[in-house]
Length: 226
Image (cartoon, rainbow, N blue to C red; front, side, top):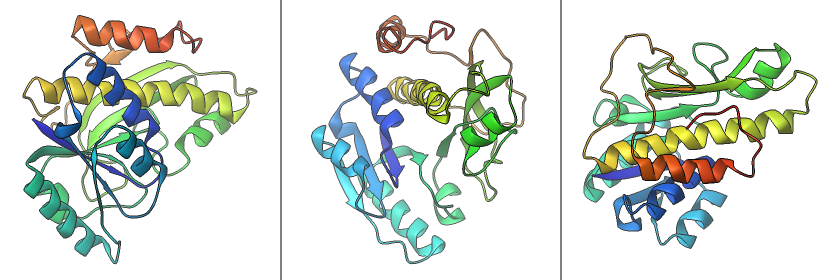
């Protein structure tokens, strides 16, 4: 299955997940299309990996979503994975499964600045959530969540952001693994996500688990279980 990515900045965590999957031979550049609305680091990352890029000027939510869906459909993608700073419309998410990775253990801390909000609240857990996009702000049906014991609230925000990057990369890797197996991640459901170890659901391929473990080896994330 092909996958479209939608980014408005760096999308580094998604590309980290892609790199792990690509090294395991389960996804390649021809399987991915990047959609952006501006010049950004995500475009550079895609070009470095020979991934196609389609930039769409953002005039309004409805037109952008309609144009994005047309490009996704032409590409033949089965789903869209977002790391995007604007809301998209029903012209996209009602036409094709549209997934978002949010840097909090939803429903806590929705919206922009979630990691900083978690730190300010001295949250005991730092998490990331993969969910279907709907008309709300991070309110769509849950697919997967991952988490660790949060850094100290006294730690710099950069420490929290580095930990959050790993959690988001894990969920991106999970999406690539699922798509490569011919499945669309988590059909919409209102069921509560059950916690199992540090992620629910979790990576299943030995190669992906090993690849993610290698990624963790120099990041002092021993408390995360891939």
